[in-house]
Image (tube, rainbow, N blue to C red):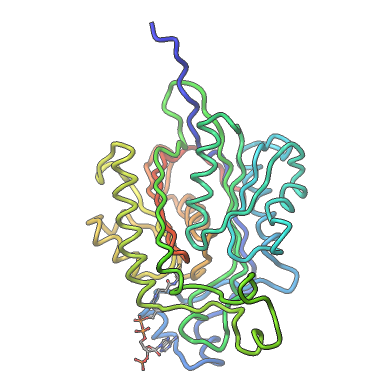
Length: 343
Ligand code: COA
């Protein structure tokens, strides 16, 4: 008899989101830059996005999403071993936003770190959580994607300001020890990157290369700069390839997947990924019309809405794929569990 114990599996058991109440529509954007609702809808599929109020930040939004994820998983903060916060818009350069959440949720025994992979941050953070659990370094991990993109968007640049929105999502990832298939299990994850393309999507100022100065502020160097067509091509190719590889790694076929939730960047990008994979439209979930691109928060927010709208149910297999600045991208396959939705 083989007495060797199976390694624990990592399963998503809790999910929470936070979205600011302020809505900014395309028509409102058209009052301050030269654009139109028709152009934005046709090129991106985005109709409106949420914008953080003066008191809302990546910390406050990430914290609210985390509290809901903990309730959803029926855990308290002190049961968390590790807090990972994926964000491109942290509260500070340091301390990490993860440490601030760790304190606020009372995760007194937990390690905490921020993770920088821009819009791919949630997939990256999920993969770290899974690795910690499978290697028995943690049992309960809080994974957060939180972004205040409205504070790094150049509101005079019509090619970028139409795309992004604010919000946060969080999941609890827990160890599953028994031999039965774990509902919620993250069955496989793939991460990829290509730093040679970093110049196509970046915020040049504010780091060690270009610290904030009067000149950097005047030249608008602290805002997102983007080569749209390059990012578009990279995102379609990257997410489709990573999705394929994640399936292969999990010994799965495309037909085994019930739903795809891709990073909510642009409806045309998602359509490009769908068509490259040859997935039926009915298996693609999309909510970017309401929120725009919320970077690392987009996947957990989309998972939340998919559950709320009954598009994602217990037992279904969902493939998630992300892509962002770096370039960094990845995909994961999850057997969805019974994850209560906390309003
Ligand atoms: N309203 C009206 N016109 C606009 C506009 C806007 N908001 N933004 C750009 N344009 C104009 C451009 O100035 C250009 O005009 P020109 O031909 O006179 O120079 C024209 O529209 C076409 O621009 P182009 O950049 O080729 O459009 P596009 O079809 O590639 O769409 C994006 C632009 C940004 C929507 C698209 O490239 C995209 O979605 N890229 C990926 C962005 C992304 O998802 N980034 C985050 C990834 S994590």
